[in-house]
Image (cartoon, rainbow, N blue to C red):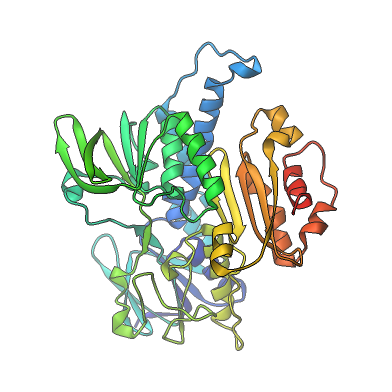
Amino acid sequence: MAQHYDLLVIGAGAAGSTAASTAAHHGKKVALIERDSIGGTCLNYGCDPTKTLLHIASMLYQAQHADKYGLHFQQVSLDWRQVQAYTHEVITSIRGGTSQEASQELAKQGITTFYGEASFLSPNEVSIEKSDGQKQTLSAARFVIASGSQTSIPPIEGLQETGFITNVEAVALSTLPRSMAIIGGGPIGMEFAQLFHRFGVEVTVIERAPQLLAKEDSELADQLCDLLCNEGIEVEVGVELQRVQRSSEGKRLTIKSNQATRDIVVDEILLALGRRPTLEKLQLDSIGVKTTKKGIEVDEMLRTSVPHIWAAGDVVGQYQFTHFAYEQGKHVGLNAFSDQPQPFNQHIIPWITYTEPALAHVGKTEEQLRQEGVSYRVGRMKFSEVERAISNGHTEGLVKVLVDQQDHILGGHILGTAADDLLAPLIVAMRAGITADMVASTIFPYPTLSEGVRWATDRIS
């Protein structure tokens, strides 16, 4: 007879782990199924290793460009193996040990972890296929599907035969290539572009759209693009990648722009064209869970078309952010056992591109407000006018705040050093309904970069 649980969670990333912990905290018998390692994509192959690598790359870059501060280093060198070792230590530390050690910690919370590929046998039964081919059946009263996402692979001629890497391989390369083409100019692509370039790789970014970071405010996205190009990153926007093939020189990419074609030859190709939900092995059609190309269909409570099955995180296909997945996981962990499940509030979601300088935003862009016909006002503050930024020698970028006629904040956009952290007061203001005037009249400490946020709200016109 199959082991039975109150809740069975598929996927041990941010959404799944949080859902399992939330339910277990409320006394439920919980099982967690993971096909790879505890922590999911973000911890093992995404957010945490990339931010670690970006930080190390930044230190290397600052050391190489410290002359303006009067600092002269005799030799600045890179030990890639040691960089990788440190990155692995960070992953292990955040997880709380190895994947098995993390499972032991989950067991202390009352969560039983199973490793293998999950697939539904019936609406209340799941089969787990282990790495050795053995299978095990579990049953549960309720389920949370949090199986995550994976890199989208486009049907480009010759791509599969030529070979490529994704974020999974990119964060754990044994050696650095001399040159790399990154396909995709979104946040993932631009973060990898900067970190690899700063580690000495010649990088070319290829983007089909006319603008990099197309979902960002165009003014700030264009500024960031200029800064990255000035560092030496090659950018090809508005081009179509027609085919890829191997040659004696390396991997040859043929791109088309304005009816003209030309070739780019590199050592490695990194795909960063976005992600798609991981659903293939779950057999959701057989149990009536509705899906689309974007992911699992859920209602505002995050319930699927099958009443006792819920979904959260990347697999839902809304915002593929760890902070979003965490909150959804917590929400379904409560809703799954509630007599009155609550809608999930997703109106105020922060977006960050963790380049240096970082690009961060919450709420609407100017382009969105114009398209929607919404009247708005703008406040700007350049970091070249912020005393702390001047003293630090990092004056690139600005703060932009968009408000309605009643002074409520519609959107906040920051390009600058520590923009990811500086966005926090605007997130809180929007969540709490605090007006821009209240932010402007609040005393911020001097000298800090956060004053840029205050003065932007003070300059709204």
